[in-house]
Amino acid sequence: MKEKLKTILTDPRTLLWVWMLIAISGMYRFGHGRENNFLIFKYEFWHVVNQLPLYIHYPAEYFDLNHYGPTFSMVIAPFAIPPTWLGMLLWLIALTLLLYVAIRHNLFTRYQQVFIYWFCAHELLNAVQMQQFNIAITAIILLSYYFMCKEKDFWAAFVIMLGTFVKLYGIVGLAFFFFSRHKGKLIGSLFFWAAVMFVVPMLISSPEYIIGQYHDWYASLVGKNADNMFSPGQNISLLGLVRKISGCATYSDLWLIVPGLIAFALPYLRLEQYKNEAFRQTLLASVLMFTVLFSTGSENSTYIIAVVGVAIWYTAAPWQRTKWDVALMVYVFFFCTMGHSDLVPRFIKEEYMKPYGLKALPVVIVWLKLCYEIYVKDYASKTLKG
Image (cartoon, rainbow, N blue to C red; front, side, top):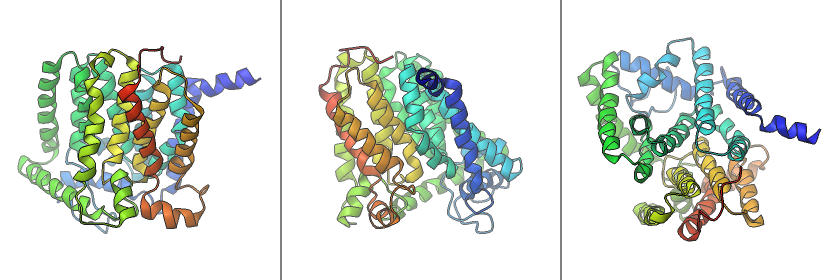
């Protein structure tokens, strides 16, 4: 009986159905004002078609501001045209399915896949409930890594530029540049797809309008960065953790970003480790966590990116994880993944978690431990767990 249950819980079909149910569960908020993010996405398409400003308030349609690039209008188009309820349902399913496929058809072992699916399920739910494109960003980073390692540089460039022109985060896919065996082809493909992504929204509007919206997009991102500084719902990152605990608004984030970039880049000097899949996957995990920890735009639902990174870090090691590593994963699960759920008392969430961005702390600790390991460990000592 125990063996049969294990077989069911590790069956890819079971995991697919679990993730699809999570996707569909996001619809329970529909009609109660919680579909606001999808409305922002949907109306970007129609605003581009009608050549209206993308980065101003439209209180009759949705609250908050749009911060996605003009190219996103083409991504959301198939979901913006149907009735809102159907478009949102298809959107949630498409996002979840994309991430499922990016994990399933990557270079992970069966053990890794199963662990990632179950460990990240609740974080996926957090993102689904907010209809977040961060689910797709996670998939884009994973696919960038996969295509680069499989010498499919043309498609690696496609997903990198898609993520960049939609939400900038996709640019971190260039972190795998040194894994490419066809760097000239990759660079040429990047320029090709950048041109395509820049021009494609002009097909449903006009060149003058789109060029103007790119300028406005830049201005909106600069303004958003300033607004995020002490926001309880934004800047849930290493940057926000230090900023909110210190209460200081005068120093530059570069004091943290520059050391962070150095710590992130040092593993690239270990050229002899590049041949080891475990090393490359650990670097992938670092990219996923770094993207969230060093962004002032990180929010609760952004952590699907980081938590997938945590799961990859834990499973990629070709050595036996210690009880302290297990304890750290428990810490991540309960105080990061479940940090905004009803399992955490309300006063802790309202008085500590949100004001100080403490959701980021477990991931910060994992990332620092990852940095230590990737500097000193030999990733060729054993094969990955099967």
